Amino acid sequence: MSLSATTLRVALACALATTPALACHRVTASSAPDGAPARVDDGWALGSLETAAIDRDAMVALTRQLETRRDHRIDALVIARGGELVYEGYFRGTSRDTLHDLRSATKSITSLLAGVAFTRGELSLATPVWSALGRTLPAADPRARVTVESLLTMGSGLECDDRDRRSPGNEERMYRRRDWLRFFLALPSARPPGARGVYCTAGVVALGAVLERSTRTPVPEYARRHLFEPLEIRDASWASYDRGRGTDTGGHLRLRARDLAKFGQLILSAGEWRGARVVARAWIEQATRAHARVDGADYGYLWWLNELPVRAADGPTRYRVVYAAGNGGQFVFVLPELELVVATTGRAYNSPRAAAPLEILRHVIAPAVTPRARGS
Image (cartoon, rainbow, N blue to C red):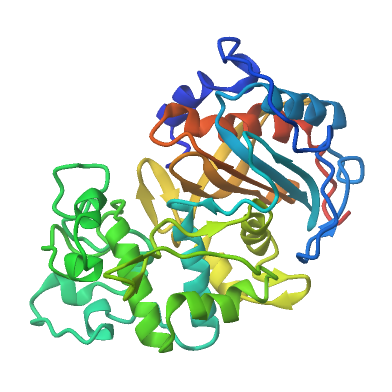
């Protein structure tokens, strides 16, 4: 999911602040009126809207709307600024402890997991995928030139397009197979590797298999040791395929919203969490630099890159945004200029309302943030 012009137009029609047609229902409140975060032993330093220079009245009004209007289908909203958690809200019967299916936002976490392996010297961007998986291809076969970096940038060049139901590698076809890795490796070449970015979940599944081969550790265990524990994430659930033999690194990881936001903070802090290095700065810089165009947006290493138009108090402006996105409203937005991280989970699957968090960010949250002078 990208912040393309089409997405923006569709999302605008669903924005909470501008859509009076949204049905209203009373629900049980599970958030403080101003979203003040609870003190929980999960590693987050806590702040407040006031200390973060975020308009409290705007956030109280937003909380009220999210609690009384169910059609947005947002389950959780978490905000951090300057490394401090300043807002958390849970809606539609969810709570702080709800593990939520992240769908394709999982891909961006897989990117960071690859970054950990890169940092530890266990993974190279130039490694050919087929040889890493113990397969041999003729030198003339274009697939022999598909590398780890090709998978990170959606540039495998294979007949794999999740946006085209007729594509041999479409993810819906993959889900009907038992062995997803074998499914990917059997796909024919459509273009030279790296020639064009085409959204392909199967390629990220293959990346997970390469990670397991390179680190000699199952993905869930490697993630627990080297990514989740350093981020003080204690509860996570990966999906699997092939009767548990493979890990779904392309989707369906389940996490709490507060933990999801930590990955945005890791991006914002150039690979550090609470002053400790988790991922190399060089990896974060490469992961958040444009390597391809996918679905009309710039694409890094499984992270989306764009600009967010905002009408701030002093006039229109545009902020750079790095983000993870998953079907249903799973987002992690990072706005470096504002030192801002916003994470959402939701259940607007296959619906235009999945973009409601984007419009809340654009029309409510970002305008409510007072920019800080550099170095302050």
